[in-house]
Length: 290
Length: 306
Image (cartoon, each protein chain N blue to C red):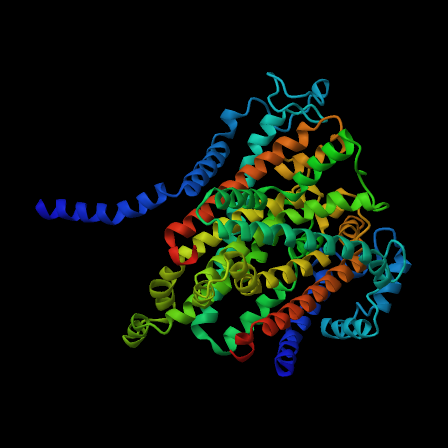
């Protein structure tokens, strides 16, 4: 009984400082609130949205914001508020899946390159440099040009583009962890390479990988909505935020709300994850901060 | 230094090779017959066969690749299926407009970004720091195309100060350059701040202060020079990326640059033009990265000998 109480107290001691550090970081709190709101909006979209996001109602076209249509309507009379709310699902999906594609591929390549070194490392590093040779959105644009514009292709394109960032980060950590005694000890007692990598090396890189993922999530939202906006991302009838803004391009003089509301939503969502990333960096890895 | 440059050049070769293979394979990955894809949607069956024969698309892939490289070596990127002009010529015509935007955006964002970064660093922990860094993170989060559109709504449509599209007058440059500068300025403000803070803690600055130098001199003459080394890298990388064309901004403003050319080529399914722009942009980016590395080594001797 006493030992259980002591154990609980010890657990609390370990947990509290982290929580306190989280609470003491206003950017992180604001970021978590914004990001949480995005997730809630996506989860409860059918309950929040008053109308069908795709249904056309020509008699209601280009209505300014009002009580009936909070964010107004677009050129097909679709309720913009409903479209923007449903769009949060596409945003969460785009951000999460592209980060997953980027992180799993990049972390695996980085682990293998850093663990085996030699020609394996050389091959992987040169391969990733080819990806890095394409500036900014060009790599994603090249992939979209080949595969055609769609949400899935956008996820693939942005995911692949994220590989080098994760791989470099993990490779560096593995190279330095490889020198540590506990890794050598694990090797000495005959642990398999995969076990050493996953059990002994990977946990060291979790914090920086999470921080990078927050930044990449925001980057994917910006790049994805930007590409959708110029017609190289999610096709227009879908309520993706950039695609909604694209429908408003011809009406910016008369119906500003079609571009402004989804645009503000994108900015708020990205600000949320960026704040989370900054805050986590300060909390999890004080060395990286200033 | 000469040896360092040579080593970097040699290291760039396999990457260049990889880029050329990737661009070459783009056509193979497009669903459908490569000859039909390359000939364009409007081509007749005869034209498709002619292209298949001319480009050797009936040959094995390695042979095709060698012929692709051979054509590149002769300075040919193929012919646009739309205009039937040499792709290189099409790009060369558009490049000056993209270059102008890139130079403008790099200059503006460096002045604003580095200025804000210094301001934040010397006011560390005070209101000035929080406000500046708050602006920077918002700048990182706002989509550039939203800023561009709000700019058009306010300054072009409401106030009639600036033109909506095109590149005819000097006023046409203002909105695209400002929109393009937003992100890069925010990135540079953050990097300048942390780099300044690191330098400000160094011992030689304590020495400079101990000598009785005024704080402004300490910061301008001693701290800034060293703090700006990492900033140089970012400036170079951003310039390289901007040279490739600002796809989204050029499209919003109907800008006659490389970025819009590439996007139009994708819509027209003009694949030789798509391949050509992707290849040239990647090579330009590689070269500018190389210049940045060399510049970095020149500024910071530790890298050359490290």
